[in-house]
Image 1 (cartoon, rainbow, N blue to C red):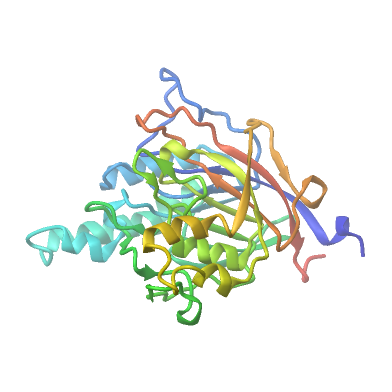
Image 2 (cartoon, rainbow, N blue to C red):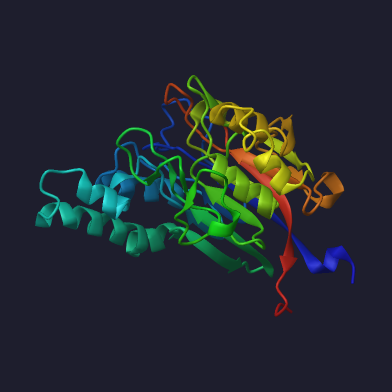
Length: 330
């Protein structure tokens, strides 16, 4: 059977870090209506700037204006009320009825009638499978969590690994993964970047090394994220086949390198990068015809719409993938 009958061309519109953005024709924005046609909209988190019920409602209104059959949304570190444990810790009276109700209201809003009207599916951390009306099917892992930085939501410490099972964790870390990334996902959507991939800001390379470990292990077709506004863009990641144990242990176990120096040097033993230009509103085709090699390359997309000054100067990414056709289809 030819690939044309076993795969379905599918277009994704990818955005992140919209932070209370609304479609206002009086203000210049790289994200404007009407957006071009897409089968799937992915929003990689930070819908709001500081949470609040009205901000979440406005975000749903904004997302409802974008046409797509399927709209998948995760939270980010700025979407405060959606992280229950964080929200209850950030007040002197965490058990107050009003405070607990704020989380419940936000969660209900993102999963209730307003989300239904906007055709938005709000996802929590884990793996999900979707099939479109075209028969295209894909498995996606999502997570709103990023390394702790200040008092924001959905944080974990640098020595905690949310993404790999214990036997695959890096040296010096502990696995806290309740939903580790499985090996067979097509797409990974996280709020933050992996270390060394579209993660540069004035503080340096701030992506997560444990997430990099997981993405290298899985080698998905596409990994999309945001969080680091300054690093908005896309790259083709060409994974190297160097042995995992060799890359993890060389130098560090022999005491030749300080830990942070070892981490920085080990990153580029994992992959090579090739930056690509954004052809928006045209779609960037990421298929076998255009360089995708299963298990060897991954398209990494930092889809932050707002720049470092919180201006909507970065356009969305429109990506065309060849997805598997569902076995039960037609």
